[in-house]
Length: 94
Image (tube, rainbow, N blue to C red):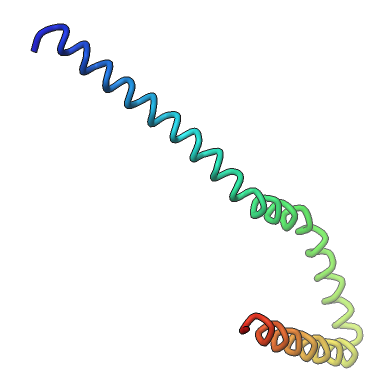
């Protein structure tokens, strides 16, 4: 190949690389927009983590001091969660 043929091929490859970079930037921006709600939810969980740890420790200590009341409350919570699950499954089934 002569120099002009190599130059043209190089230009085509550089143009193709530039187009790929532009597409990649566009897809990256779209990805960030789509995943933004999940990122916000994850950040919320990370920010609440210390409070959940303290709350679970306090709940554990309460359960040690008042076991009968604690277990009764757990039974009530499990029943309520079961009812919520049945209602949710019924509503989303349709």
